[in-house]
Length: 164
Image 1 (cartoon, rainbow, N blue to C red):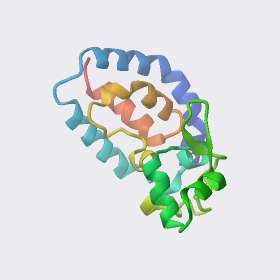
Image 2 (cartoon, rainbow, N blue to C red):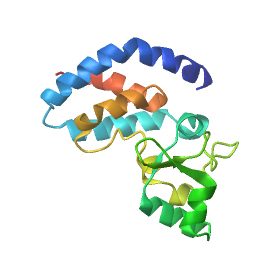
Image 3 (spheres, rainbow, N blue to C red):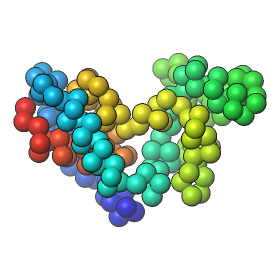
């Protein structure tokens, strides 16, 4: 996994134009069973990729924290939401709550998340490759293939399996 992670940014860069063109065609004319195909590719790929050997998403990017996430996580820590925000979060240029720093404060050296059961929605859904109407999140997916080996592999499989 380490070697693949080292090569991932360059591979994603090399494939960026092809992936972008593919998503442009996919958005114009999504296949009938795209959601089912994506679910299958997602499950198949996550049989091959173990997030605990990677955790690159937690090491290099931070999720958005919705108000619901902040409420749930601060309750977990038995702290007021305002204290949680002051301790861990900042407001970004889009006026969203994000982590003050990366890697994520809740990521352990063993790549386990200390708040896994109450983690933000953005974390639990990452890399969003099993989302319904997948073709609508092409920009997000193009970003995710740069940091997530599973997302990269799923998109590669898509380009071979889905004809658009």
